[in-house]
Length: 517
Image 1: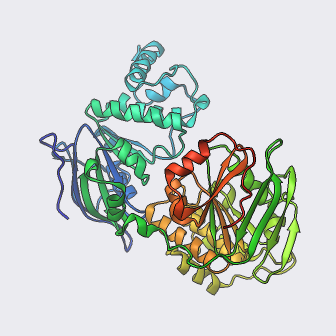
Image 2 (image 1 turned 90 degrees about the horizontal axis):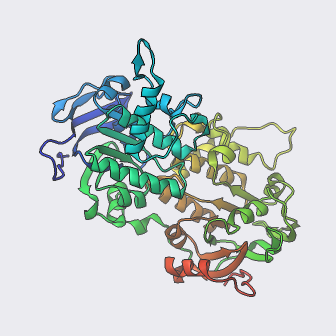
Image 3 (image 1 turned 180 degrees about the horizontal axis):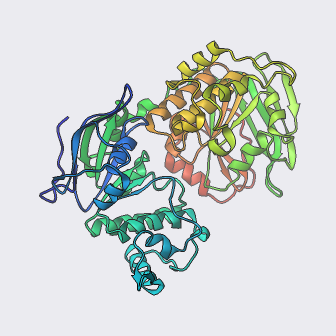
C-alpha cells in the first residue's frame, strides 16, 4: 500500500515506511506506510486484531519494528524504549492510567523533572510549573491536590497534561473516552481542539465511529495488519468507514429479521414493579424474537433487567417462563440469579469484566460453567472438548480455549460470555448493552449469534443506548420512561426520531401492556 499524505505542513510530523512487526508466526503489521501531520487529530481505527495497538506501541517505544522505519519530522527515529520515545517527543495515554495516587497533581506533573534549588526540591517552582501547564490544558485543578481524590476523567486529563509538561509534540490516546462520562467527554473535546491549535499531532485510537467524526480530521484504517487507507474524515461517512474497516456495508452488520410470526411464549411478566410508585409492567417475549428496550438513561431499564434475572427484588408482580418443551414455571422475580437461571432465563450483564466473567479462568472454563447450571453439586464436572470447540467455531473465537479470558479483546470476552449461555440451554437471554466496547467486526458476529439463538426457539430482551443497534437488530422495541413501558413498536416501522420522541413525551395516563403484535 502506498503512503498517503494529507495536505498541510511540508514535512509530516510522523512517517511510517514499510513497517512490519511479527510475534512468533503471527504477523501483526505488514508493510504499513502512511504520514501524519502536525496540528492534526489523527484517528487510527480498525477491528480488533487489525494492528492499531501494535502500531502505537511501536511509536511509544514498547516494541521495535522488524522491518521498515519510523520518521519524526523527516528524520529516522530510534524508539527502542519508552524513555527514548519520550525523549523524541512522544507521550502515550494508555487505557490503564499511570497517575500515582499518593502524590499531588504537581508532583505527578513534574515527576522525573523536579525543579531543584540548592540540591533540594523547590516546591514553589514546582507549583508554578504545574499551574502553568494546567492553565495551558484548561484543567481547573489545585496543584496541591492528592491524585487519589481525582475522578478517572481528571486523571486522564492529568496524563495529557504530563505530556505537555514534558514538551511532547506527539500524543497517543488509546480509547480515551472509555471511562468518561458525557461532561468529561466534552472537556476532552476542548482539550483536543487546544492541542490541535498548538500544532501537536494526536493519534486517537478508537472504534467508536461517532467520536472519530466528532474529534478527528484524518482517519487511518488498518485491517489484518495492513494499511487500508488514510483519508480526511470529511471525505468519509459511517457507511464508507465501516466498509473500509470490515469489508462490507453498514447494513450487512445486522442479520435478516425473522420472516415468520414469533412462536410460543418464552417469558411472560405481569404487574411487575421495579420501583415504588412506578406503574406495573407487563411484557411478553416469544420464541424467535429479539425485543429491544430504548429510552433515556436512568428510566428503569437496568432495574427491569436486574429484577427479571433475580438480582433485585420486585415490589410486586410475577413471571412465567416456558421452556422449549412447553413446560411452564411461574415464579416471583427476585430470589437470586441462580434460581431464575434454573427457570431458563439468564442475564448477560453490561459489566462483563466485573460481573460476567471469571477473568483468571480460561475460555473453556468460563463457557463450561453454563453447562453446569443443571448439574447437582455432587456430580463431577466433565469437560466436553467437542462442545467447546463447536461453540468456539460458531462464535468466531479463534483463540485457544486454554487462554485466560482476561487476556482477550472486548469482543472476544463478550462472545465468551454469550457462549456460556449457549452451552447452558437457557431459552431466554436478557442482554445489557450487547456490543458496548466491541469493534465493528465483532459486533456483526454477536448480532448473528443472538439471531441464531432466537431462530432456534429462544427469546432475547436487549437494552442498548445505541438506537441504530436496536433498529437494526430487533423485531420489536419497547420504550421506557419513568420506570414504565410507554410504547411497544415494530422495529421496521421505527426511526431514531420516533423513538426519541416517545422517550421524551410526557407520561401517558396508562402505558401499553407490551403485548406482542
